[in-house]
Image 1 (tube, one colour):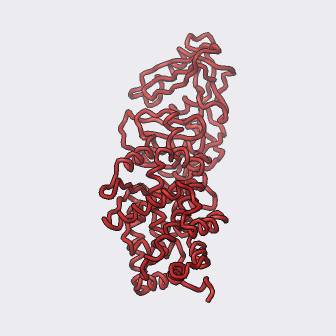
Image 2 (cartoon, helix red, strand yellow):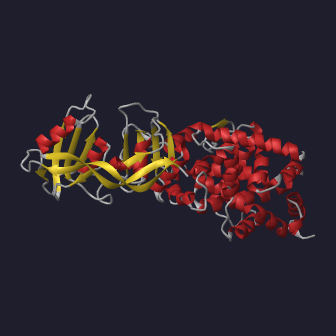
Image 3 (tube, one colour):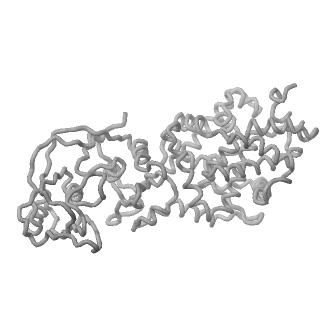
Length: 498
């Protein structure tokens, strides 16, 4: 009989009893993609995922003779891969920041669904919350692509019972994601898992893992042997205690008797390191790669949005309008909501290395069912003109002095070394942009003023719905006036996603 015609347990017995390298190689070939994908979701680093994969098959080779006839190898390998990856993360937690980012761009591959970048970081943590039978059923159905009938037969039950078990397991997974802000239907969840949970491992990995495992680790690196040993200890401890920590996929064991949650908690803090009252470019640049929109944990006056200087952004107590403005890189006074604009406030981050602003667009679409498109419309605008070129509040910037641009919603605009206006591709701070932010209408520069200026003016905003106080101070102190006109302007129209 050909090796391909044998089931997993038959192959395992043939390897354990006859030392059949061909049988073991067939097992590796069948399951290497699944094991590699579990490892890759945890580490987001292909090289580390390969090392974990090799360790898993070293473990399989060492335990082949002790696995019972009733074991479902697919589920056993999934659980072993998860625990091995967790062991790896425990030793690598200090380095995960720099090693994850280099490979997070895979989450935004155009072939993936919009949901997958939100699901992937949480999937294995959600799976760890299932009991063994439910977890095996999910692996067989959505990782291995088995039919309900095949799942039932493997678990020793009927097709109908398998469907019921899977429906229950999917609902548990969906509830897990919902509690963490990823709201989706069971059908959408299973479709995303089926399409994305198993990725192709490197072509040579199957052969390498087989060779290393058959050599009982004799040719493997010390780090891989240490990893395999640590994973075996964790597996033994987990089986003995039957305890699983449900979180972000990190289960940490200290010795053989206690669960070390401190490192897990530290990792959780790291994941949300950007959710602080006072954002800074440094905080954003060091944040782990992610696209997240969650209800704010702050109250006014804690608010603000900021970039790291590239195109990564984060915001605290931000509005949906703020997120749309950043996601589409669009002037704030030129955004029109045709759908109802949500009024709640959120903390958000888009810190993936590959097109973070586009990733935020997808996050907004998923979270609020909103999308923007450009459209030219006849629009009421303000035209900014010079009315007093000698005004004391309009001063030429002296090169070499510090630069700054600040818009304070309490009634202040300060500019040091900023232009009056600029194209969207120019530096992000200029006067007309901040006037648009304040007035929520397009502001067109017809001052004829070029170069950089120092401007600082304040006004009392309370109860001034028409912003007359600001316009008066702008005119009297800065020598600039706002004239209302109607012109065709390219606007960003935000409506229900199609």
